[in-house]
Length: 473
Image 1: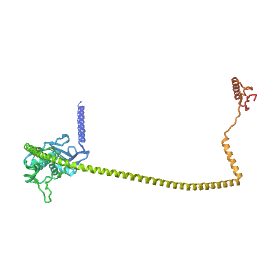
Image 2: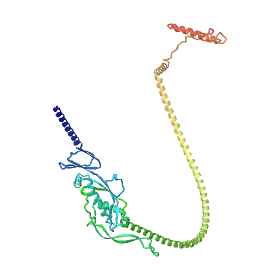
Image 3: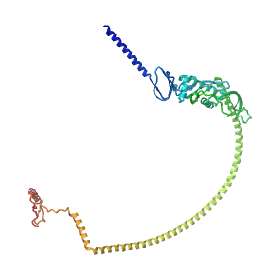
């Protein structure tokens, strides 16, 4: 009884070993393949050979389970620094960047950056060797470089300059430095030209106009080279072929002190404009009163001059009307004369045309008569020649005529049959022994029916049936 127990134990061990082998084979086979999707770059690392392979297109690829690693990188990255947007469409969302301007004011600048990885496999392998994962790439390079360029670019502006129309130029410089490298700069005092309102004064005619003022400030300015181009630092993105495809700057937020300064300046400008408008209104009212008096005096002079001119115009108008009436009468007479001449000329032309038409008709009639006569002579000659030929061959002509008559008769009478009646009934003449009543006629038709039946019985007899006739006829 012990031997079967040993056999059962061995069977269970073998079964467990087979299950483990099958499970291991299934796990090995399941992990021996990996899929690549569109929009991602995959770096496959073979830990045995140390080889790195880059895949950028969708597909299914072999891997060595347990001795390989697949790192995934997004081909397009969108980094949001304080800009609103759907987090599902963004790679990383961070707060806006706090910057310090050249005049020591601070502010927060929201921005969105869009980067694209290089399709070059060597660049991707170099990037993977240095950063080893997509998260390290974002944290150590993409985010830090974006924040650094925003901070460096903001030092090239004063707070007032930035928030009073410098945002578009800031965006252009930010995008340029991200793509081509940061400017080499130096800090020095520069002269800034500003446009302000002139001081307010009652006797100042140009108090409502803008004046250009200059101010010295310390700023960070780019250093030009010997060719006048801006010197640049090396771009850290160029080593890995990463491209900047889009830069969007949101609505910047100034610090409280700078915001109050901008608001106070705005209110001051508004007060200046209001004061200038009041001065201009007072000047305009004084000038208006003076102009009213000038207008009244000018209007009186113009009325007198207008009455004088109207009288002269009336006289000239009457003379001109008389001239026009006389001229119109003369034109009417000349018109009637010209019409009469035209009518006579037209009648003469019509008469001449009729004469020419009659002459043409006469000539045409002559030629038509000649043509008719010539045609008749020709037809007579043809008939004479025809009858002469028929006279010389009269026997042949008569034979042909008889042949034609025979053909016509044959074609019309070949299907014509003449059958004699089997019976004949005559009513005779009234009052001379004929059938004088309907009874006689009915009796005659009854006799005909009996005779017809007898004829069908004796169908073999070809003799025609007798004819019943009025004995008086």
